Length: 309
Image (cartoon, rainbow, N blue to C red; front, side):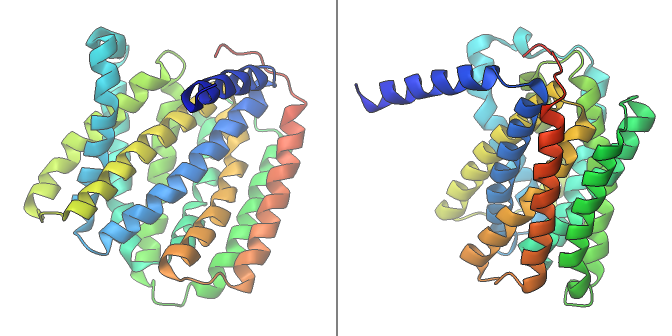
């Protein structure tokens, strides 16, 4: 059997196995996969933002994400990607663009693990918004998992808050509620939009809205930088698709404790790429986060929720 044939068979078997799992667990798997991909993309984006203007990096990252999707759009036709709610897509794109502007502005000035950890305030905003605006049930175990995970993040962040990050810690923190609003809009859109439609229109709207800033800060990337932008486009697009699938399968509040695992991936990548050696507080916080993640995953697996794929 040829290698492509073996990969195809393995993929079909994996999908069949995953389809037998409870919907909540499948949503969590998609969430973890998206987190890993986002961590790799963030590491590449930080490297690029150290070399080029941060707003240019934002524009080119989403431009390449759009280019990744276009072959599927051309093959299936534009009608397949026409949104049910065009206004909602642009609202989501505008909110996400604002969050990205803040996030990319702080990115080159902070260690990758600290950037990820501060972003973990987002689940608290998301869980509050999911309860208030989406009517999702806020079970006690979800709150417990979220706050234990958040405590683990504080173990990592608090010893470093007086470091060189300074003002940029606040800029990064300000991006969290904005991204939370974007994810809540995404969850609302999954009720009647396909995941592929949401991912396409996010890439399109953020590319359009960030283009004026990129125009005023244009620098010609090197061939290696162009290649890195292409990689961020692929990673970001697939990661957003994973998150959209996760939101479609599970309550958004049920998936948020899994985001704390991103700290583990960010610490590892920061060490491998930037030489940022994780501190004892990072590992202690990561242990607390992992415990909370495993605990809520086991709790959610006992709740069988039947939803369409």
